[in-house]
Length: 512
Image 1: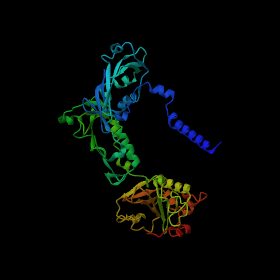
Image 2: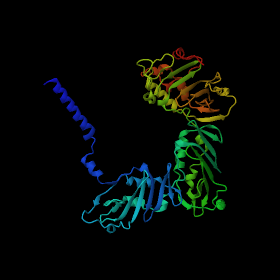
Image 3: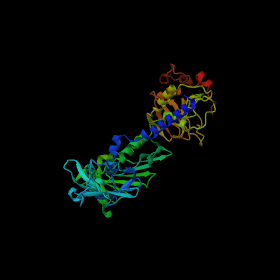
Image 4: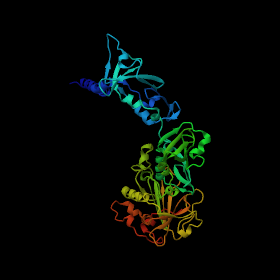
């Protein structure tokens, strides 16, 4: 065979393969084609801007306004749950069977379509589509429907009609307030029993009232989750007289909560007195609505927590995968480890490493660039992330040295003004999302216990730290170099600050 013939056959083979892969293989199967042929409508729910219902029980217009739905009459907040169920019926709306007659037009009256039992109009991309819903078919669970402007009558499942044919109250939002937790910047709670205020700045939560301290993100998220799920138990009245607010206890509310988000103006929730006919319910109202509601008293009480519950117990907040640098100081000894790039950021890096063959996600010593064992470093970081405060000794102290912890840093250098002689050491962790490192100072031992005094940079108070912090601050670089290291940070013994490990001090960077 000549080489020209071989080339021609090769080109033909490649062309056939390309045709099969790009066209034939991508074509729907006969089963898929048969299924698609039954689709009367296939409207993506995220494209729908309005839904108009005229059914025996439901005569309502629902309109999307930004991220929420509103219903008329009343201009009330609408429940997106029932809306999503209705819209899911239209994506797609499939016919069990299509009826048509070529010789004689079908009598729509015989199928309950003139007049129709009910209808609904869906507006998507500014194009309205009206679905006429007729009588039930002899086969239970199905109904006759007709798309306005089309000649055929179809038999579809009655689930669309059953889902949409609900009383008006079913379309109202049954939650007191809806929001995304990530968008919340502050929450203030004032109650007769307890009050507190929480504020988020640069993605860090702080307790600002009745005291100032760093707050626990997980506890706040749990509170916000309960708040956004607070259910309305009863719709009392739509237009309560303003002059009668004291009747429901809003002149001296049981509790008042103000939520601040990035998406909308602040909204306050007011909780009044119990209902006369049900003491388990409280009157409730929103600052941006006229309607009067009732909520469960126990649900409100679950939101009124002690401010102490929100004080941060974790000494560090980080994901081990996001840590870029760690520094451990023990007396005169100090070592630092780093990795220039975290695993999550390597896909964004377009410039190759300056050193050929270097893995920028690998942990190494900051001074010698000696490679460390990843498993050992991650084990150390996991133990560090698990350290929890045992208690709070004293707030806003002017003299930290008596507890063996460093004074707060001056300016924005991130460095302490000095460590007292009775300090055990310090641990600092760097992450890309924070300008300054998270730094924990381990101070003198607490008399009569195995715990230690401590302080976190940025918190002007003394912490009660568990004894495990001394094991962590005694960790050596040798323990992080080899996976076969026999030394266990948890079992490390407390050594004198004046006698640092030779291996640690030989590789330690100069103290700043």
